Length: 468
Image 1 (spheres, rainbow, N blue to C red):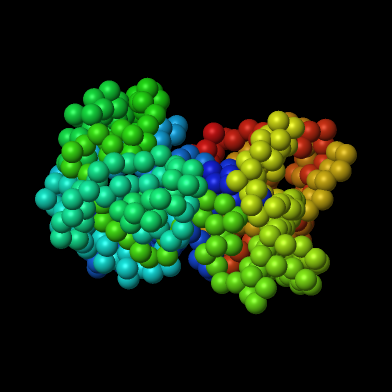
Image 2 (tube, rainbow, N blue to C red):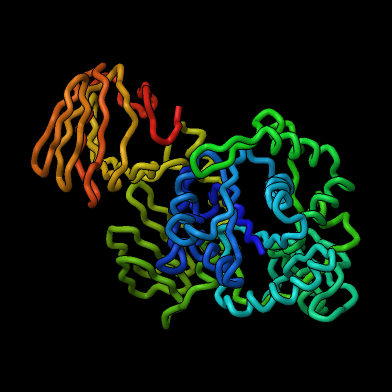
């Protein structure tokens, strides 16, 4: 079985913790592990031979690769990069095309990278139930046994019952509360989990029948693929021409072979701050508190601190989330409107919707410490053995002070070896490169001075990670 993990979302509903450049699947929002790490573990746990494949984008590729290298170095079946987002149906088609080259009847278990499942054993049992139907040619989806009249999910109406699964009678759009209550009472409706199981050749055959334009574009993009380090890049122009559609609309609602396996495993798509409040343990006042938090006369609230102390007094049903650069305060019943705040941030030309103060790069991280007119200060951490690009800047000079570890600095024609408490200066316009030759992380303080300090003032000459 091949676990196909879809990891292309931006996760704006959990802003400000989730940002476009580092969305919720890369964050430990429920446990000490990231949501992506938990998803990879679910795929590996299917059996001792299960492999994991990821579909992601250019921006997130190195974070996904780091997860797979840490958890599944011998069982990774590849990382496919989408040049643009075209929704789930084309993304899954790329995975099916890749799998079918080795084994057309390979079972694909499709999982979003940002869901929570509290009971992995129940999930494994549901997958085993669905595998038999999938091998027989059915297209399996997993229907979450509802425990509330939720209006934020699509529903699946179950039809004729079989051993371990039901035919799908219909996919139903998100209902109003009255309709959702009726679905709950009738008992033959499930939440649509967005997880699927089928043979690679069956999915491709359904696309041939239902979406010929989509499969043609995906086949062309796949035929034009090329390898780049650990990644597979598909043909950009062909994939951009592909229709944009979800697997639900493109395939599952049209096929005659859709079946649903009930799943009761503590599932959540973690689609809002209220969803996080729902699925985590509450204290005696019905609060969920993470990080440095103290409360007095507070109830029904979700309070999350990333660093600073949050002291809350006399509030009910609130969400408070603190990061280095943003504090969100919201009515817990209004958190679906967080996207409106994100839209305001974008409209004002700010960066808080896109980046955290700590920005992740393939070589490590940098974090803004201070900024003023014609200067800014950053903390830079470089992974052991990693190197920044050979580059220069037109508008700024840089001062580097090594705090921890050892740095090799290429500065023009000079090569310097700096250890802790040593420093160097990179004049404006001079070609330079920073490398960590050691076995521990390199940490340094960078002071930039100049007329323009934007990240786009970089001219790269050589780059280990093939960035432009």
